[in-house]
Length: 229
Image (cartoon, rainbow, N blue to C red; front, side, top):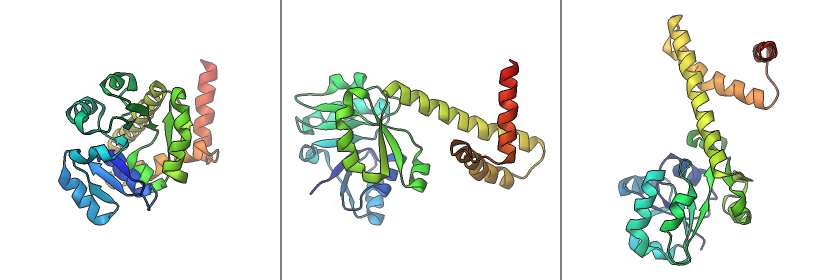
């Protein structure tokens, strides 16, 4: 039976389990075994995997922070199968820094997700990027994720810049709205609701080309100011 193995069980890994195919078991190793055991009570496809059993898995998804991956690979290298394929998902990490840690015929495939874990759960689908040098893996990833994930070709550094810029702009928008509305004395409840629904809703409308009057006016003013400069 086909299985997936996850190293790390943070928000992204948890979201992927939730939206992935219901017939595929997921074996998980994490620093906090209790977290995995607790998750397995709600999702029976999840089971804990001990390092001594790593050799039975030829495909391993690395959902660890970039700075934790080297230690994980070095500490457990003796347990891995000599032909293991590691899918490297840390957005801030570059595969070139990790590749020297591989042994024998092991392979490293960078898979970078263009998403936010909470939104991924809500949408039930997302987007993952493969560098052009690894485009041969596109079909394999499509097979793994099915319709829940669009697989695109994009370089690691470009995905990093995109995720970083999008995160910064989203946080700044929420922070600026909060500061301005607090100065006007608006209740916290109203500000939180606007941040939770208005901001992402307007962004979706912008992307889909269906902005209302307020949004159209903002664009008109912004483009007019740019032309003046």
